[in-house]
Length: 196
Image (cartoon, rainbow, N blue to C red; front, side):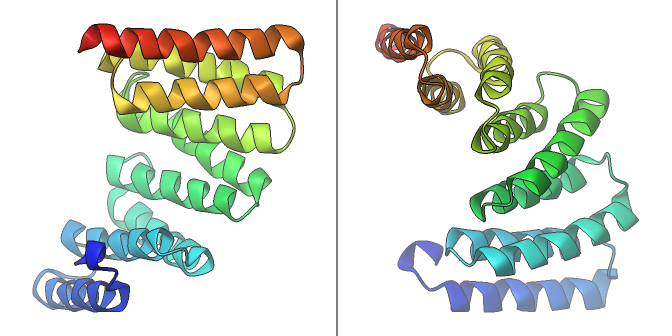
């Protein structure tokens, strides 16, 4: 349904499902909370970022209350909230939310868990957007290495991290970093072709 660009209808269906689950299972049930989170995702995907931020804030509060802040579902919402804030240009609050998600995920889920790595990756992008390119590049290098080990060199998340790291390196304007960025992309391409 989403691919048909029928966002309003998709949100209406998810909202009806949420109401039905809430009536049957109670407001704090994981299915109810997942619907809430999904409305945020639909809003963000449609470019309604302020609405997505508001929904994610409400969904996060509900998930934290029902499941705890270190639960994987709470961390997913926290990560999406941070990413949405980054897309809105609120890089300080984005980095804060993503840093909290990364710290909690690392402690509770492990350093190579996808939520941990996604939070660290997105936090690095928010940090870079604030102008701290060297800090962001160091974080992205660590995420890239972890994703290579956990997912392989040709996984889309590994490749996206390589692309983002090359962009951050290029943003520093340092010749050595620009050369490293170019080499990184060529290496990622070579590794992907070799994996085929």
